[in-house]
Amino acid sequence: MTDRTGARRQADQRALAATDRLIVALDVPTAKEASRIVDDLGDIVGFYKIGLMLQLDPDLRPLVERLIGQGKGVFLDFKYIDIPATIEGTVRAASGLGVRFMTVIGESQVVRAAVKGRRGNSDLKILAVTLLTGMSENDMQKEYSTTSSIDEFVSRRATEAAALGCDGVISSPNEAGLIRSAVKKDGFLIVTPGIRPTGTEPGDQKRTATPRDAILNGADHLVVGRPIVQQQDRREAAQRIIAEIAAASSEYRAG
Image (cartoon, rainbow, N blue to C red):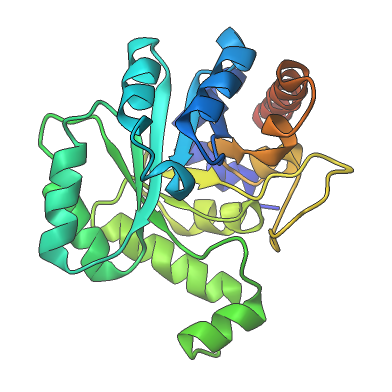
């Protein structure tokens, strides 16, 4: 759990409505299926994440245009990594689409290029991925040839991203409190996947938390996929999570 007194000093994001905090992940094989999910959820949800499963679907662009046209937030979660010139050009192109968030891998040269590529008048927020939620500490140490703990690794990536002008990070909800305490930049966003309501299977996620715990740890936005999109009554599932977010936000403010 984070030091909530310190976190509240930075927490203008605490004023967000619960419905603005939930981002539903459209991690499905086709844009047509994604559109059906959007239809099912209707006005309950106002923010959607589009990931790699939909990247090559020819109907993706119309889906993005539809969502933006309906006033929905769009989060492009493609986790870009490449040489700086390519990253800069990619972000420059995305800046004109009207999407709200996009992700890049949290390596310094990638983050620096992404920030440079954003158009000056764009509202696009650049989010750096600290460490994928499907990785354990052992996975991380092996993959990155490091003896650092997850907390050390994630904290270092978050503080470096903030220093380079990044708008926020993607992290597991377990590290949200650490990041909130370590990064002193006003308005710095923490967006957390790996959200699993009580009683929900973690699947391939290794670092998870409930919606309540994620909010209490200092997260701004919660990305939720399977616990909503794979339910028979998607609206009811989304409403339950929004209610939990609202209750936790009130508890955080009262803390």
